[in-house]
Length: 326
Image (tube, rainbow, N blue to C red; front, side, top):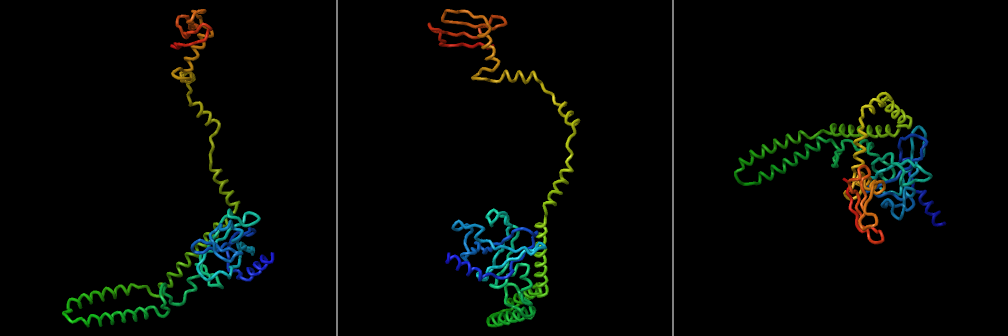
């Protein structure tokens, strides 16, 4: 117990303040989990990242409870024991008494944790330094930097070509063409204002996406019920008259159905009709050969056809039977 209390005390010292912020309908129990870029999740008590489900751990071991601040707004604290880097915050709605793996995920946000502050993707553009070029360390005037680099490149190339001691008339002409093409390409490089404008536009689009997701989260049960009711109202079921007319148009040939049933095979190559004729001959027809080893049963209507011919032994046991259903 002492070890557990010490662990809880240490954990309580590493929480930030309200870095996690989302909008969602109030009066729900929400929580967040922190994911690394490879998908591993932050274990609250052990203060480390692990594969979800390690050592039978579940959502209750990874959850950071969020506080409902009313007005469809929730906040939570980022764990300051997490080192700086890029992470994803995934927010869930708790369905039971405690967090569970079956709880539905509502929202996620990618961003950068600098050890103190959480910078979401929509905020990154506003954090860039003035005149910043993505993938470069240039932070001064963009055009000046480009011109300086191009002049240095041209000077170096001129020096290298001047050192070549042979007829360079053809090379000079090609070099002029090359320089002309390079000048044209460098002119096409966007200015710092154009780059900044594109970053701002992308940031606006990301914010619009976040607003759209928040709008989907605001769909209520009443909205769903209304949509279902409207669709049901559009359904026009058939009347009794229409159904009666439809059934009256169906023609059933009862005689054909009956014949098909009787002609169906009952066993081997004999139909139900064949077996009925044989049974009628034995039950109701005339017979000959009584007291001998061959007994014959005739068809009841005429008594002319031997439907069943049975050969018996001295004790009356049948040893062979011949059927003649037709």
